[in-house]
Length: 550
Image: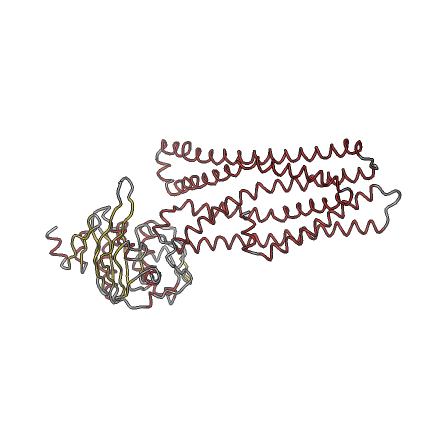
């Protein structure tokens, strides 16, 4: 069983302690059955020894059961945190292109729904273990009463287990299909949160989204979940029917075959009835474990997929690359290719040959779809080159040092994410410096910073982008990259950005690359690089002369 292998791998000591506690609980239950049967067949007042034994066994059953549950409760929560941390660590180590291909919904389902299913299963293990131990203890007591009766019940148990397996086999397929439906459902949830404005403005789209997309995906999940549960319920009740058949045979057929006393017959019936509850609990737990196995298999498959694409990223390491001064950054015959929607072929970027030096302000221009943003991600080390190589200070960048190389960059991409705190080296004496930048960016009346934490990020798109720019400035790294930063800004802040902030970075001996369409400010650049359909068509230092020939 996948879940059992997972538990043994993550915490063998926990499995051993839980097994011991469950076995002790089963032994106590077997003793309780014997005590109850003895008390029912005892003539006269019960002895003090019998009362003490009953109390001790009952207390032992409760304590061992509680011990197993407490142990598993701690383990399940620790396992949940560890699984999520492992997945997040692997996600951070995967190249951006592979993450984009995997898709956000798969990652979100694994981090939420799958982890929850596994946690619920681990919480059910103490109940399963105790029920199993109770059945084992009851079997020992029945063997002591009559070995032939136990063998007959064992034969029925084998028949029940075989038929149960046949009945639930198709249920596993339905659980897997329901889990696949979860990916589609989470994709629609993402569309709901990110496209809420468009949905509110378009009644027909809103109705189609609700009735066709969400309702259909939810119906598929419901259909397969119900189908799986139906098979588990039928199989569980079939085994209950077999159990009742055993009781009927003991009650009506056994006295006809063998001469037994009423006291012995009472012991058989009590023991059998006592075991029906644990059997039902045992079978009911299998549904939870089956769901957990499907989720765990998905998590492990995702983990293997992430590990297979790891680029050696070390999220806990210090920023090694940021400490190395930038002398030159070269792209030598660099190529990158990827599939573009609504086109049959792959878009090929390159071969690209570029050199960036400190104290230089470079503008990257070109039409939409020309590959500017992809080239920026290649330069920043987010996309590894398919061909050619990137050299930092003459040293080639590969998978072994790519994460160190990425630490040279401070970026604000067009699809940036604004975190609510400043981390790393930017924390050093940042409050005073941040206050100056907040004033220059006209954010001091909206935002304050204390201990590196922003008072708020609930701002307009343009203000959020200015705050992202502030974070980049405070990082103080050798290479700055801005992707259409000024597109959301009013003319005042565009002018501040191009005529004040960018020249200031250049004066601080930073290499600066700006992706822009603002031809009004092309003259501010030291070099103007034009990209067209993935190829560099011009790399001109005299931008004024270039503008006159456009």
